[in-house]
Image 1 (tube, rainbow, N blue to C red):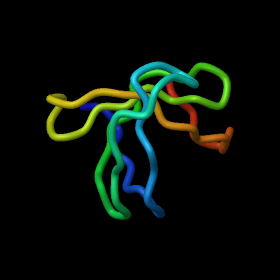
Image 2 (image 1 turned 30 degrees about the horizontal axis):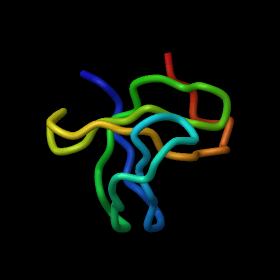
Image 3 (image 1 turned 30 degrees about the vertical axis):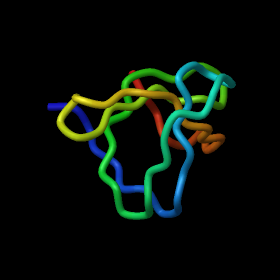
Image 4 (image 1 turned 135 degrees about the vertical axis):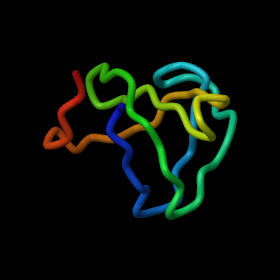
Length: 64
């Protein structure tokens, strides 16, 4: 099972890394990181039904 994270602040979700904003996730939303590309992380939420990219410059979160 993939590691889940809980957002500590409201975050915008983008269609592509550094692309158009498509959604906002409020604080406390559980997300599953899928892939990292620089400071951007591809995520899913709502059991994989929703997907997008968030800006998460914290390198301590390791995603394989």
